Image (cartoon, rainbow, N blue to C red):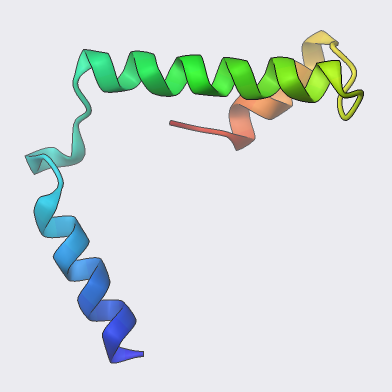
Length: 62
């Protein structure tokens, strides 16, 4: 388990201080989330309703 904890420490040291994402990264993640939603709807995994969209957005945070 120490290896996993060490990996988390190493990864956290490479993050931007404060954990903030810049505008480009936020836009990229938002675009990826929207693309995933459209894919899931097109395959019939999810029905495209308001509440399903809200639930998806709440469980797939950036």
